[in-house]
Length: 233
Image (spheres, rainbow, N blue to C red):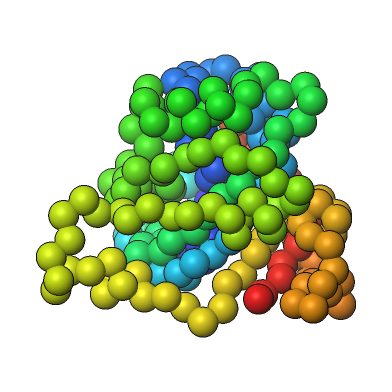
């Protein structure tokens, strides 16, 4: 637990897995089911609007640094360091006014089919939010199952619906979510999982990234690094 917790400009693995966990109504103590959501699906994200980062303040309880003891998890801070807990003012970042399309591909051992995940998003058991309950999704997820040869095809052929039913002329969607000139794609897996090379996409323009967002333990609030790829159209 530090003084600042930053956010990326697109949803990570833990955020998407947590969203499905809430939609399915999985209790926090069902560690095995949360691990299934994080490991049995491959994820790709197409960022349409990067949005902005909103900074908010929190007060949190953390142990002091006396004795130079290292606390590796949030659980360690609260249990091992219980006698030394104090109050710390921290800053958190939350992504707002952003829009992204997320594609999931299920592995053979997946506990839920993609159709079942879509149904859960349409009728979620718990509140759907990314990062904090005070910041719920501002529009329905509009999830669908579509057939595609690869992630890029799925992301580009998905037609995003209008987010708001009532749209007077002065409040058109483009005013709040303007169309950006280029899109960023993030995905897990190989280059072939994303797309074949053509006149637009080439392997030489792909970046390899490491992101600390692969859930390792829901109870201990631990994450491990995950490798993903980035390509900008």
